[in-house]
Length: 273
Image 1 (cartoon, one colour):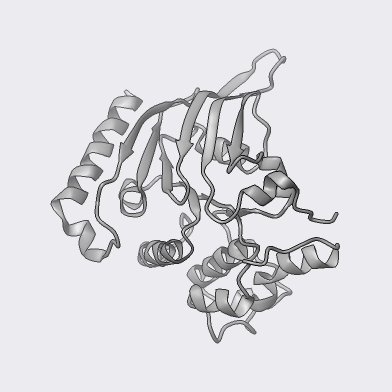
Image 2 (cartoon, rainbow, N blue to C red):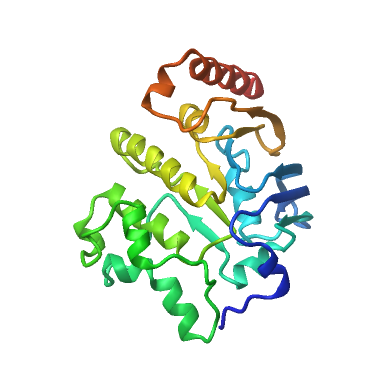
């Protein structure tokens, strides 16, 4: 299927705000025992902002990300990204997705993995944004210069996730949607990847919606942290992270950082009890 940019998708260029209005998701609606995963979610994310979703397991964080990415339709409510629908952006190749696993094609080298989406679009007569970075530029941005001819099995887990991030940026997406992208990594690599992500975000300034279970990771990365309640998932509180940028390893040693992590811990405890 060709990837064709329609007027709505064209409006949602690099860096686009996300508007989530009265979104609810019910699994098995109409069945004997329907399960309400999300209920009346309202959230506005500004253009270029980095926002993290946290909350107890099963609260609907990943479900909400799926709705924003058009991998799932809400039972009620709607989502708009820069004035376009998620479906318009998905069809135009303007949604950048990064998951827990890198999901690279093992038979393709890293260069071809990163350029895969561009190749698919061009091969089906679609249009790639003129602002889309080159594969060489992306290799450089994510710190993989010199590894383009390697295959996924020849790279560490962290390097594979860097390649997955580069692939997500290849079509100049309007937003980046990230579902626990560092969860499978060891603590040292995860820490390094958090700073790599901040560096890349600082360069491209995409709007990011980021799912994590790590409170300290959420504080370090985000402009705002959205705390969700247990199922049915609702927004319990939105906390502004007023730490100065750029953030460094020393940021985590500051009193402000510690207070924010403690505040999130207390809020999470309250919402779970």
